[in-house]
Image (cartoon, rainbow, N blue to C red):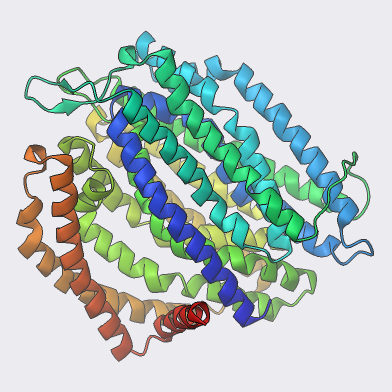
Length: 557
């Protein structure tokens, strides 16, 4: 892939990511407005844990990591990799069906394991949600499988835009829910609005709320089928994993599945610990649990998905070809580019999110209560400190998988999960109200240590990484971000009284007030950042800007 092609692919994926994330924000706001961040919300969050974990690991670890390097090698064969692809698709579909059946059979155990002793009403609702959500496992797997076949053919558009389709379907379901089941207006003694408790959810509510969530995932997978046909892909079921280099893929898959098991353990630990902490809450003093953690994590993921994932995913086929050609200098150059370009946005994002974490949570989730907004802001502040190591983690994973090395990502995952487990143990020694912050801190520290481990292991494999160039760029970008942050914080202090009393505001007033605060302070921040970056001759900012301008000119043409 030439530089121009890489730029176009990154921008196509950035466009799809931006559109889907915008709708994802709307979807999240509607979801939390309906179900809240207390017991019912945590029950739904628990139900979504297993399919979401499997999807993230299948798309970013197993199917993605195994298929793209293997398909790049297989496409050099006489049949263009047709037999190889047919065999992998057949086995993967059968495996995903089997896995879905197994996890659905064990749904009751899954709820018991993660509920943290929150009571029979909670467990009953969580089990109902879980049975409706677990079929997503199969459709997430189909989406990841078909998407990576498209990526191996340098076709990124449909895969990048499929989540947009999923969000359209999901939003339609949530809007229908709000029309059919209007807000029952539960309030506490102080008049604060509260979401429906678990015992207020009926079977029809569960079917509509969770059923449309699963339908949206199915639509996401089916959206890729026409794109595969346009790419000339045809499929004929073939069984067996012998031939065309499948042995190497199988060894890599074993390491990837080991990483899957370790990573699942980390997700299970967090969910169980946060539910345990929430079980100590009372009707008058509830403790927020997994769903509020998920709200903060979703916001944390926005810049990562917009920038790092788009750039690194577009780089991955190139890294795979560099590895197949044994071109180490080219691979290192692409690796450094994958490190540097995301910093242009992610470093200033870190600074601005620290400044405006509370208003950001309130703007993107205006239907939740004021206490949840405050606590969600604290959790987001802690999480965002790890956004750059989080991106480095992803880049190291992709580079190791391109090298057909599954052992090193497993070591990185073990480090991350060990820190997660340590943070979970700390929650047993602290008041339950602190659990959310402790778990968020564990995620950040884990990402720092995991990314450092990845860089060390990669240096052993490839030699010196040439990170001094990356550090110079990071220092310049960091100076620009800090200067912008100081002036942006000053602007924030001036305008923040507009959104000072969230508890007394209606939902629409919250949206307007927080949008105004973030818009005014953000404008100051962006102008100062770009000006200082230009003065410091940060070439990466000009490079990203040039890519966007060229794309805009082509679109007008």
